Image (cartoon, rainbow over all chains, first blue to last red):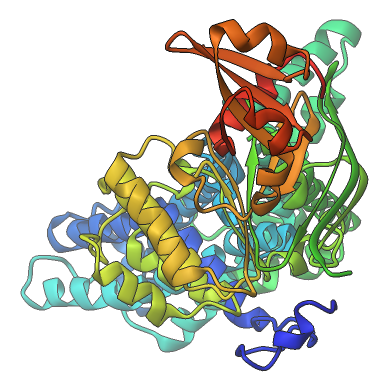
Length: 316
Length: 286
């Protein structure tokens, strides 16, 4: 590379003439992901807190079954269905909390390092902007969804034990029956829905990340105001509501692409195992939807923009 | 390509202000270079350009690399401490070591740990719990443990008390610096570190006002302390700066021979700090 340093090569652990060594990508990525969980502790504290609350509810709460009468849960099949509903109901708050903390995480992750000026420290290390920003998307789109799935799965194994114990000592009526088959089918539904939802919401994640990279202050306002104001402006100016429809579609469209309204798990007269949704939900249709893939293309563009902003921004 | 840093015609504007206005200099390997200038002179902009943190026009090679396009490769060979407050406040000391160990190919954790053992810093502490001086020690521990070829320090001891400042520079000189490493340093406390420098670059209004090895300064610049009544005659030799000291006049000359000046009064080589003041405030020749 140069001559002054070449003559000292060999005294040092590395030769100045040799190309610089590199950490392997896997180790770097794991380090970058760990760092996100050190900084944004809500990412793991909030879901664990929810699990704690749910355990508390299961241990001392009362289950109130509000069907027309207690009849429907009398049969064996109904009690198996109730097991899967418990699985689903446990997962709900976990998924909601994880979606919230992940959204706030995305809004904060590139903004916080500029606000506290630590960006100069991160940038003093040999980690590219591409890798840094990608690691944040990895946390939001892979690590967190997988983690919440595993957490919900663990809860779905723990709760039947707690509730079963209460049935044994007589503090609960025998409302559910364990069925490994139905339990597994419910987990499969959950995994598939998680996968489809991650792909559908990826552009939203990219949008939040971009706002985080761009906003000088108040990233929450910058992220929400355009979504709220632009439909209002459109309606005032043109009397149309295309933007509102579009935003609504990007926020909720996946659920009608999947056909959630066709599942009829809980009706007035019966409860069906969640696993029956496997035959009803249109996973193939959702995954082959052009809108989903367009969204992913937009995600790539948004992340790329966030990388460029982090690389070339000069306001520290 | 023998220089660690080779800058030619660096120019950078922020709106109407020219932060860098055609700056050229070069830094050889194994030197400790002081980049010295008043506030707003363009020091930090120059450092940012070297570190690939800002855009600019002009030619710049750092360790043979272009900081604009090869920043990631460059950062394996370059360390920098921007100033004391940039370690994230939520970071634990242990996590700082884990992180750098996880991403830097030339980080030797044992060196950082043995340095930290000599301080009062606890592995489990968060940066926000450390004093300013301790944060600097932690950052220094990280930098010492990285086998880099160029270390860039931008006001590393700003806001620290004298004891921390002294031990910072002592550590840098004794435990870090060797003939293969190069240090580029900006500071306001010139008097304190002037013995450290092997080279100085004065920068003012985005231009290089002086760039020289410290050992050359003695043959280029003279300071003569002259009795007031002799001053008028000495002025004919065109000092570029003068100031009154206890009723006598200290005059600063460039490129005059000691024999020429010795007749007027007490002759000596100006300190870097004096020379800096003279250069920045002097009105005469550049």
